[in-house]
Length: 372
Ligand SMILES: *Cc1c(COP(=O)(O)O)cnc(C)c1O
Image (tube, rainbow, N blue to C red; front, side, top):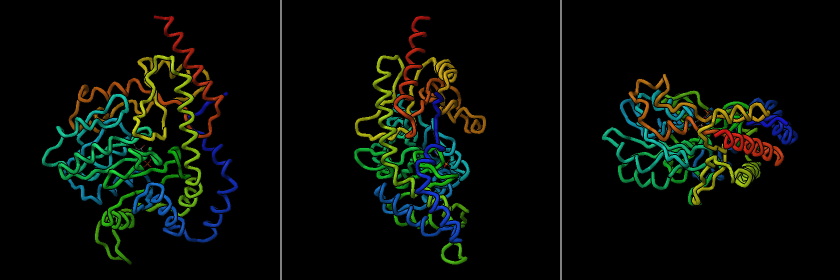
């Protein structure tokens, strides 16, 4: 039995009857840009995140970029962030002419280590940009305290974490502004690219709304140099249907994580640490072992997919070498990049499939133990 990292085809078939009439209705309506479904989806996401404002945009990357623009990040500004994330987090900082300043991660949660943030603050620092990696909130409460003490913006990359909570508050609650992604394989995914900015700040919301349509304020008057960064009506209608299933799908992911924890208890693998004050939504279930590559091959030979998020931290990537970092600068991120392995955890899996993955891992670790 094949076990895949994502199974969007199966998911589609389960919601097909709900989805298709609505998609066809939008097609027939002729209303494709900023229509009723974008508006309704914004309100629904705002409700899930208990945020005052939600603004639908064209991708998670654009959500981050517009959030940074909205708080006024400019060339020469410094933004403190993690080197152990998807490239978007850092790419948008550079695209705005600002400088990403990396701080190492906590080796157990893989999230930005708040204890190392203060020493990275300089007079040019404008914002802290943590990532809720693998579906677990970053240390947002601690980071907000630091941001407030130094007068910095706190921008949350919540692309992997819709539905997650931190001290009972939904993601985004401790940030000035947060970015969500609905890339197809995220916990809820569009049939293409889509994203959302959430905030409680009226001015930031206004700014993001304007920036997503060329910086327009009313018909053909421009206050800002903006972007073409709207959420499509077709994507919005699809996402509205999927959002109704978010809780159920998140519960499935969490159940799969519980099964893995039980089944893998006896292995030497480091299992994900979910902090007791976090509600983890397991965008990924990421284990850790020094034999990562061998384990990955072993699973592949048994028809089980796995993935490495991420194989090389951003400070060592060719494109970001100009920032001047070197190997050894962020040892926790570098070691994590060599050792992490994400296992299939998505909502479409069966208990048998989880058991099959766990069984293969147990066989691998037992064979390894005999070999030494
Ligand atoms: C997916 C992702 C993004 C970007 O989202 P897109 O919708 O693909 O542009 C940004 N940051 C993180 C951490 C992500 O996982």
